[in-house]
Length: 266
Image (cartoon, rainbow, N blue to C red; front, side, top):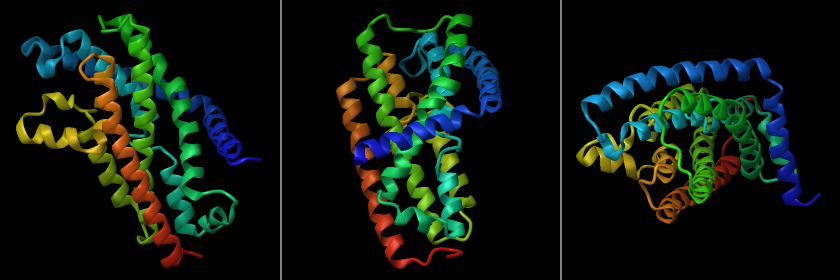
């Protein structure tokens, strides 16, 4: 089996694996929808007081909320990606088996995470978004090209998200317990991705800093492409630069870890 077919099979396996958790998926759809409704009413109240806050009108703000709910599990902003399993395998020493496979460790887990992400997008992301668009006036572009550009930005967001979480997972090579690192990454993800509020709302230097960080590639960047607030090519360049930097850093840390660190439990 060629390398491309191998990783495609891993991604397909990741998709099928998460597709078996039907009850969890249904519960996730319900939860995302309920929290989306709460956030929409909060945003509507805020935008009633401050119309065009952050450059969005109220319909765009509503769309932003439902994109956030769609991406929460897709990009594992609040956890739930393959990093948890990888950290556990490092802790127990089972990662040694992964290193003996005729496959690259990083690419293997990237493929698995992409499979997971695509299922979460279809299984838990689409339904809340559609419900939200039916219940509230939302901004939905009629231009198919805008949707295609948005999908490319989502793909790049998946790469950036994995790059961040892979580095978090690799910290387990040096730490007995990666819980603290994981929770810190979750907090940074929620605040700096725009899950709480669009990053366009953040004022002054704070706004400039959070928009320059990699987490802004996860929600803010794809949302702005769909909402017509950003140039797609410039957004791709920003996301692509962070994806290359993070995946490159992950490759370097992986090399150091597997050569110099004794695996916990192994």
